Image 1: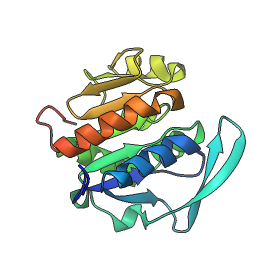
Image 2: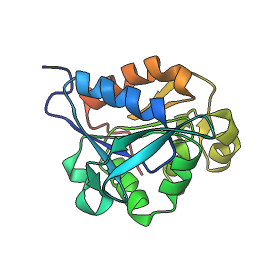
Image 3: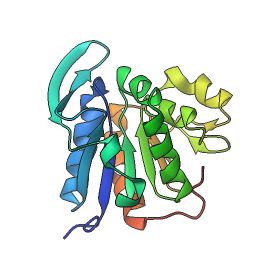
Amino acid sequence: MGRLSNKNIAVISENGFEETELTVPVQRLKEEGATVHIISSKSGKIQAMKGDHDWTIEVAVDKTYSEVNSNDYQGLLIPGGVLNPDSLRKKEEVILLVKAFFEAGKPVAAICHGPQVLITAEVVKGRKLTSTKTIKIDLVNAGANWVDEEVVVDQGLVTSRSPADLPAFCDKIVEEFAEGVHAGQHA
């Protein structure tokens, strides 16, 4: 039994996620005993990218957004990639789901370009976080306190910059998901 036994973790993604930003955290969460669901707009499979233009593996989708409710999960993971967050932030059901996690005080983790979804969900104002440098100005303009660190934790919100930060990111998401609801986590 791992630290995340009896925890259900939602991973929201579309085609174009950065391969390791989904696969590495999912593997670590499962090793810690979590039940992990890959959630997307359509059933079937979604395809990863490595970098900005190399399509790689396909990952099976467990559920669609219409089949899930934030009450079914104790944590949320948003992988990056250049295409994935842009696709996610266009979907109203995704934004409502993200907001519901924040409103319930549940831990949320986003890496690289993933925090773009948090901007659209309007949950970054006054929060300390990091991301890939290319979206720093977007986060600052949305009211975030952006810092250049490998992993940043702010009341249950865990963020990292890139695949190079995955070891620290995975350690922190396990810790935060294990802790559960954070009183300071808010929409």
